[in-house]
Amino acid sequence: MTLPRAVPRTRTATPEDLAALPVLEAAADRLLEAALGHQALPSPEMATPVEPLFVLVAGSPPVGFARVDEVGGHAHLEQLSVHPDSARRGIGRSLVHAAIDAARGRGYAWMTLCTFADVPFNAPFYASCGFEELAEPGPALAALRIHETQLGLDGLGRRIVMRIRL
Image (cartoon, rainbow, N blue to C red; front, side, top):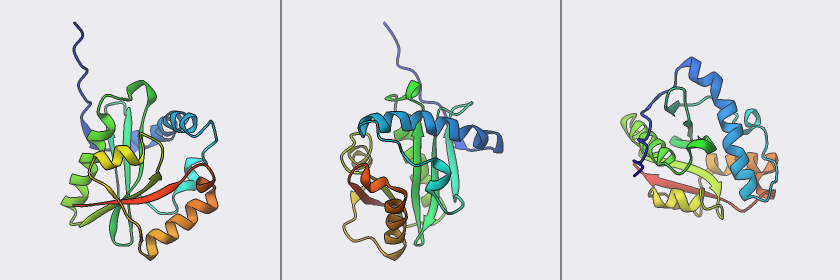
């Protein structure tokens, strides 16, 4: 009988952790690229024009991370990545819940995100965490969506904005 592996502890990223995250994100992006028909995603350093509000990691060394920015006065889950070797163990869900708790603790009323609508481990996953599609995003999220379109993300698959009340 094999016992399920425990989900690694989620914690605030250290400077040493931050240096390792681009490699972890690139590994996770390979799964997303496969789900999108092997279309290349834009490089991570191009994706976000703002400094993060906070970054959480799971494990030491990290096997997953959640980056949260502030967009339009709300917490915004900019990036969630889990290394493929650690996928499907609850790490992503644990990071999402920890990010929600951390944003709530900082006084935010909402958390938003932008994601691919038709990738099972994107919009359907976030819906299972309580996020709902936001049909009419405000000006700040609309500007972020324009930025994503300019990066070429919309050419890879249908994108939506989602949010959850904290």
